[in-house]
Image 1 (cartoon, helix red, strand yellow):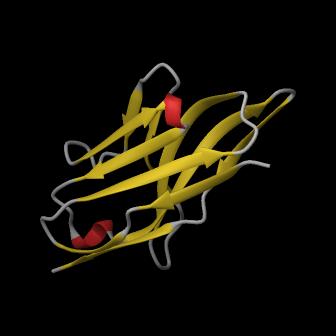
Image 2: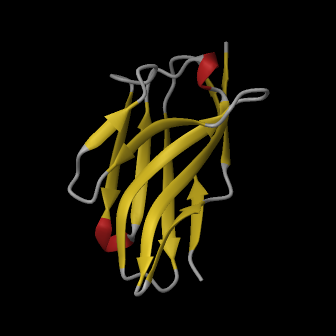
Length: 119
C-alpha cells in the first residue's frame, strides 16, 4: 500500500512564507508526475503546481513567481516553497503523485494540510 504524508502547513501572516513537504512510502517502483492541489472552502479543488519525472514544472497563474515546486526522487518526496503568501492562498493543500507499483499505476492523494494566511 502506498501512502502520501504531507507536512508544513500552518498559520502565517500575509507576505510570509511556508514550505510544504510530501513523502511517499510503501512499495514503489517509480513515481511519474507529482503535484500540489488546493481546495478553499466552497470552491473546487484546483491545481497549484506539478512537476514531471524529468523536472518540467507547471504553475497556476495565481502562484507564478511566488511558489516553487521541487522533488527529491531519492526520498520519494515533493516540496512546495510558498513565498509572498496572500490571504487568497488560504486552503487545504493536497499532495498528488502518479505512482507505479510493478504492474499497477495510479494516482494517490495525501490527507491534506491546512494553510491559513491572515491579513
